[in-house]
Length: 174
Image (cartoon, rainbow, N blue to C red; front, side, top):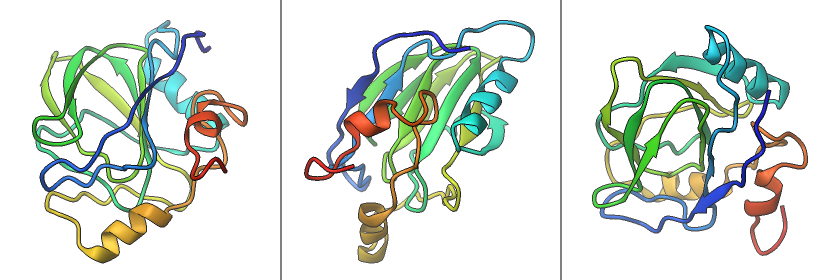
């Protein structure tokens, strides 16, 4: 079950050694999933799967800065609360809680600053993409991969006509 709330965007420029994605904003879906029952993680998995984003894991967020060059990543907050840092050192602090979703375009730096003991995240990626973990400045090939990584067919939360189609464009073309 989804809850209708406006999607927020956050466009991040390169920050120190973290490339971020200067073309595609982070999409923040506050309270995107109604928290109900005893297994909210399963609700995220069902939603992501239905929208073509196969869930890959249940866990937390690493406490060190990292980014991915081979996959756009969606994070569904199933339980608990956390303070995340997006964009690398001196980046943007974001507080997340149950039901929130973050869609991180490839290259987006992220790490956990603090979290409750029950913090649980569901992670997913578009088909054919994966979460390579990068903790150092990208080389030219990795930057090129970030720039050319295909857009997902659907928004992981809102489906075919969701926020991805509205906010992830290059030169006005999806």
